[in-house]
Image (tube, rainbow, N blue to C red; front, side, top):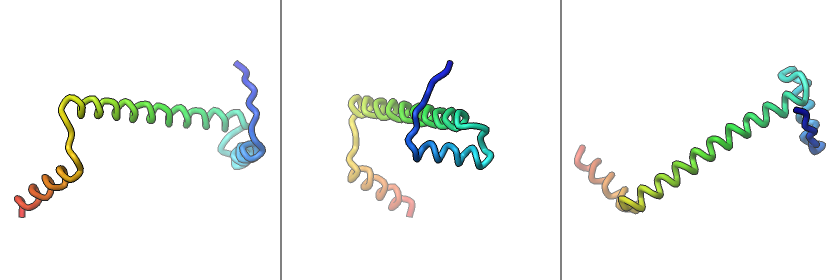
Amino acid sequence: MGTNVHLTADLEQFARECVDSGRYNNVSEVVRSALRMLQESEDHRRAFMAMLRSARSEADRKGSYSIEQVAEEMDAVIAAKE
C-alpha cells in the first residue's frame, strides 16, 4: 500500500537527520518507526483509560476514601509498628 505523507519542514529535516545518522535507511523507515511508537502510546493510553473506568466503577460500587482518610490510616499503621 502506498501512502504519501506531507511533512512540515522541521519534521522533514528531522527525518533526514535520522537517516543521515545511519539509524534508518530512508525517511519511510523513520515514519514507520514513529507510527509504531504512536501506536504503542495509544495502546497505553487506552489501557490507562480502561483502568480508570474500572477504578471509577469499583469506587461507585464499593465507595471511596478521601486522601485525609488514607493518610490517617497510614499514620495509624505506622504508629502501631513503632
